[in-house]
Length: 189
Image 1 (cartoon, one colour):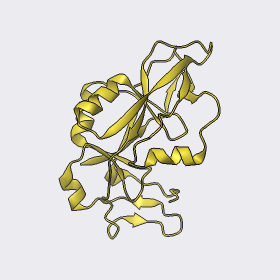
Image 2: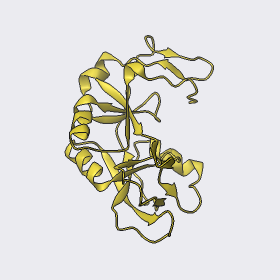
Image 3: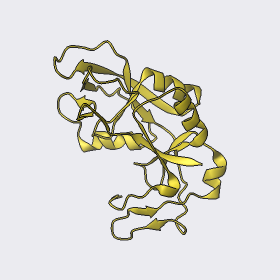
Image 4: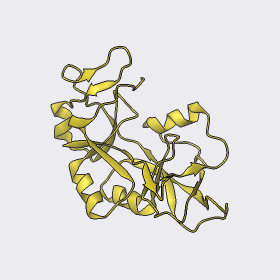
């Protein structure tokens, strides 16, 4: 079984907990590289500010499509033999702008696989959005721990065996939607 995997929008003390990019957001052509399986030839340089008074998360919502993971989550993914590259990210305190002594990395997933059963899935023909997602039997048989869907590269699928590990390790900040329950009718691709 697979789950659509993303960062959760977490609220603490009536505030959204997120990692806010410092400086200008990278241009769209740079951000689009995060949805490909091509390794970066030049290490991307990212800096984020976070609320250090809030509980630290393992998976931060950034709002720009770049994944920011704790070193703890990165190590679990490495042990699960997920194909990826990661780069250190500078973290500062949201309120003081002082450097924070926490270890986070931007995460670039390098595994892309086909898997959408186009005949059985319900796809909105106008928007390209998904009303009901059905995976192919071949995809289900592969049991790849974590990958982007070739048909919808902004969607990351997580195998139930890896979800169990993340749950057991108490990984925070993650959103898991069973593929049977997933729908996104505003998806544009």
